[in-house]
Length: 380
Image (cartoon, rainbow, N blue to C red; front, side, top):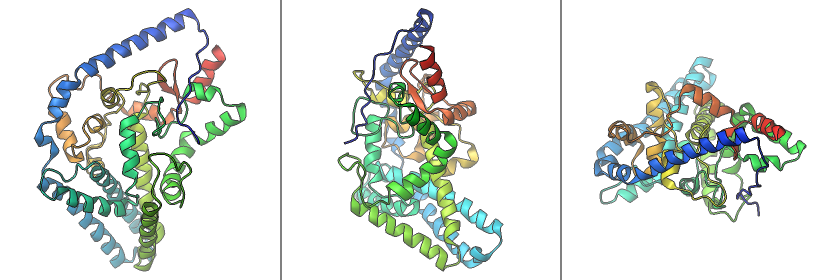
């Protein structure tokens, strides 16, 4: 069976000045991580305040109007018969639908964590019903949340095989160095940002989530056959209904794809940036450090925040998954001064750089491009 555990080869000798610079940077980074870990209990005390768990009425306000907007958008598209109407109507529908699908996915994600509805009698039942409703909206099997819980427990940890240590990065510099010239060229093509981010949504939502089998069936994150088939049936009905009522299957697909593409890019930005957080074989993985150093704060514009539902404050989400997305921004902004020191706040330049990285370099302890890793290998 394929193993996700990364075997690390000892690095060859490097020039003394280069080695000194790397060791200095790693020492500073270790000190910063220790400082973050020491603040963990005070951060936990702050995040465990009951009011950060939201309220039933607020959760209803966040979820029910979203579902009503889904119905209203489809009703409007059918009434206007946009499938045979002008292009701008189809484009407008696809864009609006993509926003609802993306928001639906994040609310589905919150339901999977048990955070959307909580703290009252019957909350688990309401959460379960909402979970399945939003699973239909975002076209995702409910078993996705099993793997996502494993992601929280293992992100950045290469010394385990329960789940992928990274989901958009597939190599460390050590594993990349072991590849032959032909396989390196293959990976450089498929992991180039243009083909990768274009194909990843299709491969995930229309490939892995639809196949009646698992290519790695023994893993904890494997989907149940029933969960896949129910989700696939709902997707078939989705496109069939769109074609029957005058919206058009391709119009709905365009909105679905745009939402899925945006979701993949957001997920990549949340963990794969230059510094990142990755532990190697024999090193201790820390959930606190993975949350505060390995999960970013993204510069989402105000006009897009309704769609992302707070997931851009990813450091808090990884630290306390039971805080619903709609409370994350308020929780972040209400923190005492200095609480988020050391947390990676990404700039727009950082986001661009993040899209380019393809590999984790175990020498510099940074995410880099294959070309940069090749240059380092040649310099040895």
